Amino acid sequence: MRVLVYGSELSAATAAAALAWVGHRVTWLPHADQPWSTLRDADWLRREPQLFAQLEQSLANGHLALVDSVESLPAVDTLWLGLSPSQREDAGALLRQPAVHGNERLMLVNNATFPVGETERLEQCLGAPHIGVALPDMLEEGRAWATFTRPTRWLLGCDDPYGERQVRELLRAFNRRSEVFQRMPRRAAELTKLAINGMLATRISYMNEIAGLADTLGVDVEHVRQGMGADTRIGFEYLYPGCGFGGPSFSRDLMRLVDVQSSSGRASALLDRVMDINEQKKETLFRKLWSHFGGELQGKTIAIWGAAFKPGTARIDHAPVLTLLEALWAQGVQVRLHDPAAIPALLDAVGERDDLTTFTADPYQACDGADALMLVTEWKTYWNPDWHRLACTLRAKLVLDGRNIYDPGFVASCGLFYRGIGRRADP
Image (cartoon, rainbow, N blue to C red):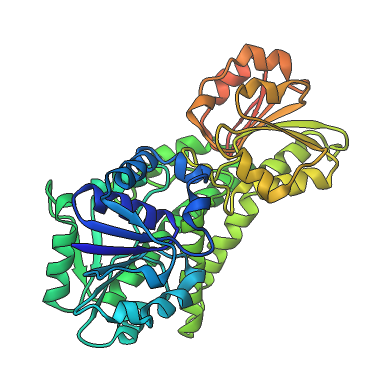
């Protein structure tokens, strides 16, 4: 098929690379806000396993072509939208271009997270005989190539057999192991994507509430989590308490779902509370630090391990570290921060500061001269540190574990104070 991919989001880059890889004739039009000249140097794209190498290979062998203007668009069978929610109007503007209307029968694949009903509106912009299908973005950042090329499911919002047949052919190479399409009406697919992330966020926030209660009652929340997860009606997925979630897609989808609820006249007290809990949890490590030092934080030096919103990515969109840094700096705290990938994004967000020193190589450099260590992002390199070295390095011998990845008893046996989310131990 002849495919035009429009957008600079991770979903657009992945679709362009994957569809070209399996033989489609793909043209990629990055969004004007982030052209290829910018994208090719973006850390978040280069650090996606396999993806950047596949893009370069497809560009080199001619299976993927880049264009930078609407005027140079070729004739295509499929238009794939991989835009951010804020670029909704740009999608409509593209569809009104004569170059797009010159195609005999175009299939629009809406892979963007727009308001519910937007696929229908975009189809109306195209007019007959063109059709539009909703195929909500289900990628996992940090493993986008794997989730696209070996999917567990696609939510296919399609209201006619022709559209389903065309999408199945477009993605046939990725539908070999087992049936991955769940066909439903377009609005249902758009709402389902938002509802899934709303449910996951609710589970996380509920577990964080339980962790707070466990702290108050002197209960180790890990026992509670294990007991809850063992109930087959609940399971273990997204049942890990922590210092808040972030990310460009997860956070935006939750806010989009709140917007959908509000615009429909059905305000959601539940989702509002989920968002409130998450924002409060982003400060939980700071509150534990405050409590340990009795509010005397002026002049302290704190080491932080991890800035990215999740391991495997260089992004910090809505990441807990941003809230945490603001709270620390307001109290006159010096911060020494290590992250293997997200330092450029962090410096873009907060700028160069006298009270921030960053490291990308050795995590222990961040601990030199520090009073305490905060674990914010659970990169694998942080899972098994040299505890005796930390006990000798950290002046206050305090470890604040924002992801509950350490064993409290073992950390305490090494002479350190351990404070997790609903967990604690003293030496």
